[in-house]
Image (cartoon, rainbow, N blue to C red; front, side, top):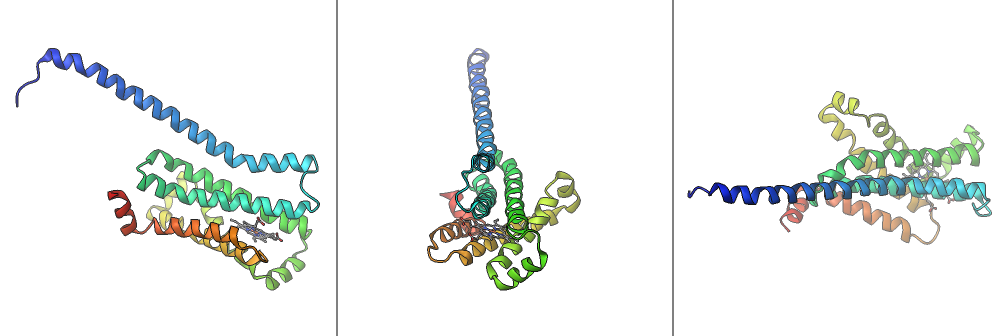
Amino acid sequence: MVPRPRALEADQSPPHRASTVGRRARDGRWRAVVQVVVHAGAVVPLVMLIGDALTGGLTANPIQALTARTGTAALVCLILSLAVTPFAGVGRQAWAVPLRRPLGLYAFFYASLHMATFAGLDYGLDWRLIWDTVLEKRYIVAGAGAFVSMLPLALTSTRGWQRRLGPGWRNLHRLAYLAAILAVIHFLWLVKADIRQPVAYGVGVAVLLALRLPAVRRRLRSW
Ligand code: HEM
């Protein structure tokens, strides 16, 4: 190999290093903006709910509006948290991975509000009536199944639990897919006529599940 003249190395390396440093700084700023946008976007439904509740903007049936809006926020955050892994893997955007945990926790937070609205505001914590409704309406069973699937995920979302459970943590966190499927079934069963919205969410979950298949991932990577 012909040795590079020292003068040429000295001439070329500083601008090259400078451009790499500049690109890293730009990427870092861009990632910080995305993080802020994701957190702000996840909090917006709550801020709007509180705003509408304080100004009487929750329609003529505020409990139904609360239930519908918290349920939708929970499902959207859950699906977005599931989208992080394929986005990071197939799109080679590893920086997005840390967004998965907060999105999952936002989903759990909205699902808890959703359930609290149902049990506390709608049914006045009358457990007998709630139990009768659960037996009578299959969509409640699916919703409860979705919530129960999310519970261990929220409880074990810390780094401490991740370390303690080792490889089992990954398997446990696959429950997020079950939660999303059950939440979509819950929505599908509760709508009376227009099934377009639950079907759209269902397609989203199906695509995310397909993106986990090794064959699909390999194909997308090579593409
Ligand atoms: C025990 C648990 C749950 C109960 C009792 C429950 C109950 C309800 C009720 C009563 C409704 C409104 C039905 C109506 O409009 O008349 C609803 C809607 C909904 N729930 Fe749940 N739910 C539960 C869990 C969940 C979970 C875990 C999710 C999502 C992760 C979810 C997502 C939704 C969605 C997306 C809607 C439809 C919102 C809309 O109308 O636009 N639910 N749920």
